[in-house]
Image: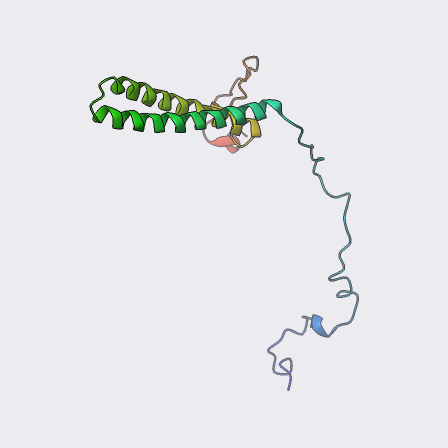
Amino acid sequence: MSAQKFGLVDPRVVDVSRTAGTACRGIGHNVLMGSGKRVGERRKRRFDAVLLLLALAVTACMVAWGYLVKAAIDFGVSARGGESGAWLFLGLASLGAVACLFVGLILVSRVLRRLGITKPPGGSSGDATSTTIEQPRIPGGRRAVR
């Protein structure tokens, strides 16, 4: 007994699994579409000498930071052992390590900006010649103006 006989199925609904018509023929055989895509061509990445220099500078800062931290530890051990001149070198090595870390982090932010991962602060492009005048905010939005 069929479900249609008892009024459980809408007679206007066609069972697609049993029809061999043209409706099911094209499924699974998609045609490549070349003209419907609205994407620009990909630009090839070229060698960026500034990016290489920034990366080398970051590496140099991090190596110098590591060396200065190790030197500060060694000077601290010497100073605690009774050598009074080591305190000065401990302070200088610590300040140098802080400066190297600070400069290294600034350079990392420039590398990230150069790669396009981050944007300049304030959303501006950093160009002093571009002047954009912001329009005053209208209370109620665009629909209220109409």
